[in-house]
Amino acid sequence: MTHWAKWRPRRLAFEKRVYQARLSQYAVLRRGIEMNTITKHPKKEITLHTRSFSKVVVAIGMIFSASLAVSQVPPTSVVQTSDVMPKDYFHTGAGAHYLRRAEGDIVTQTLRGNISVLIGSGANIVVLSGDQGKFLVDAGISISEAKVKTALHEIAPTPVTYVVNTHWHWDHTDGNGWLHDSGATIIAHKNTLKHLSEPTHVDDWNWTMLPVRVGARPTILVNDSTTFIFAGDTIHVDHYGPGHTDGDVSVYFEKADVLALGDTFWNGNYPFIDNQDGGNINDAIKWADKAIERTTDKTIVVPGHGPVGTRSDLIEFRNMLATVRDNVRALKQQGKSLDEVIAAKPSAAFDEKWRSFVIDPAHFIGLVYAGL
Image: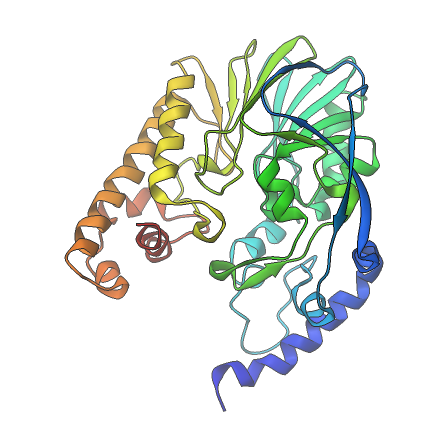
């Protein structure tokens, strides 16, 4: 009997139970076609005082198989269901880490002025708070809803009005649903909407993410660059092309001089690069270069994962990416296989500092190798 055959029946039984428990959450997906409201803003300035945006109504169609739904619904906790833990995003990968971390408290760190960051619900969540409400960067994961609500209320008893998704990954967008239900409008790049509207498989995760329900999808789309005016600050949302994925955006708060970079910056940790969905190491380095151009020594730089940083941290991250890329590329050009490249330890100079999170050196080398 193969390794897969030993644990597959138990895994499928567990996933079926998870699916049945959360069936109501995904009932909207079975209706096939839902109406969604989308506003596109390729490059313009928008004052966010009210929600009086021009709206274009489009039909979003979704078709997926029942078997896919049964086997790929994200769990709400990490559960050991057999002697052999399945090797996938939510059992042994980054998703498992985020679910475990979500069992702890949310940490609120005040950055500058009326901007804070919430740490502990998947990705870092940036919060700009004003009299008219709150403007968030990333939504975290839904299992943390109650804790995030409490943390937001402690900042100020005003509602969340807008949420920017820096890209489509689960740890940045899973909270979209409850935030939308509480009245927030979701903002993202058009490719983020695409990934959230269809099944998206990532080989590195050994997982296929289902489409999110219609209400959890972005309705204000940024193509290249859009400027928002909110709570006394000017907010620049910029897309510099592919990087970590094909739909990354950065969010720069001009008055506060705070730059939120999503997963185009991991502070002190090797990053994940989604090669299958438009990301690659060369473009990740270009993104870092663009971010460095945007900053000064006074700029506060918020990564998708890791502690709040500075321009010097961002430069160190960029140099690490470039050095490992160059080392891997030289070995690959010699005709070496991935296993041979990993054995050569092209990231050895950085491993002690950068290996401590969810991406280990061998995994990171594999991501770099695949992107060259």
